[in-house]
Image 1 (cartoon, rainbow over the protein chains, first blue to last red):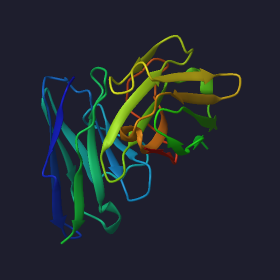
Image 2: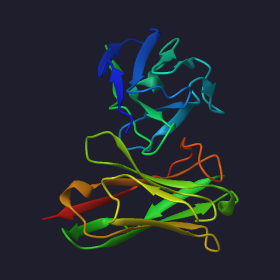
Image 3: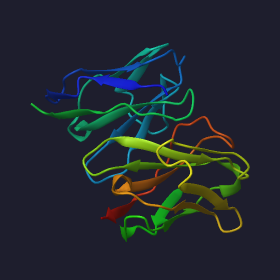
Length: 107
Length: 121
């Protein structure tokens, strides 16, 4: 199975900050990497698929990059509604594993 | 609008069975693969199973293989998860989610609201 790690596990930030979350795969997954946002008590929401493609309706302050084993989710200017937990997920092979999550909270 | 609504969760004793349903609307159900993903209380996300649009291909996480069965009824626009020999570790919110493909590209959008399964010992 492909193992996914994320760093940091949590971070504190202020509105307007630039936030970067890193995701690493245990083997090369090309660009088969997706990012989700989850708020407490809610279902996850797809933000980015195929490493860098913004899902329709997702604000352009979200961006993704990377390929192979190392990937990044960037929020260019954090907004109040962006405080949430973020998960990466590989879609290269079954089982389609998720990272452990990164919680972004208020500084 | 595209909508997925799960049902069938509840409290069940260890070793017993439960069947979850996911009712779909707002899209051509028979054209998309579908997944189940679960989340234990306070924990991260775990992919559980996928089924292709015509039901001919299915894959499972090792943690549920041999105990859980994913199926679908395209005439009823409904996805199912039959869960047998339930264990305490299966306690989770179970989400159904749509794949963008008839087989799978394996990103998930949209998701249902989830249904909670609690396995008691």
